[in-house]
Figure 1 (cartoon, one colour):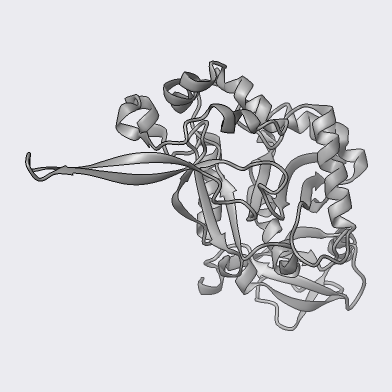
Figure 2 (cartoon, helix red, strand yellow):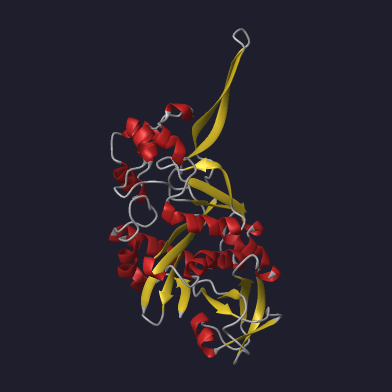
Length: 348
């Protein structure tokens, strides 16, 4: 069975194995045991902090476990806030107008403006699924399970939340935007810059990056073409988020130009439509026909989520098999949160 759960200390080796599969440009998951251990430690502390007055430096890291194989095959995360302990930079795509009445010239130029606009905002992050598990709706379970956690614990996050999408780079880790812009100021490779930011070393950005607007027309054609574009392997993740209500608001990554998409938490479809029902343990009429549903327990440290299939929409109660209940770590008559996996399921 495929189960989403909070990461645990014993998952370090498996998380390092997954990190080694991500490739250049995936800064939130790098194959560095020390960095990964810090992530696990912070996540463990965050999951076990029961009372919070407001969102802070908390980080919640989840894993997708194939319980039949005893393997961790995917990971995803939520950051309560960004930019409080270290600066968080992005580019905003804007425009500057130049005109001359004498010459009768009026020109509008697209620009990139360095900013910290997402400081203090929550982030959806660290989504990665092992390639041989990219089937059977595992990617949807992995991505959308986070919204069940958001729905249950909204006080731990800000009203707005965003996601950075991995930008375009080739198999050698070369980014067109970096080659046209970043390299001019840093004189290092894109992979090295990514490595530094993954380690939390971002001061060099403020020290070396130009604060003035960058005129997009001065960039190479290849760099202009990738602004706001996703890496091919990230396109499915972007589509899933956009189905849930995330939108591109002209913010892009400063290194690879990948898009940042955002939403109000309460406007996310899976958050808005999810509801709490009581679970009964028994034998459902059918578990193989009808729409798919995300089902999660309502626990903090012991959060778990899985995918079920039912022929009819659950009402105030939900019948789960003993195996499903065990996977969710719940008892008979415990409350669970449920939502349709697809935004179109209710209208099918």
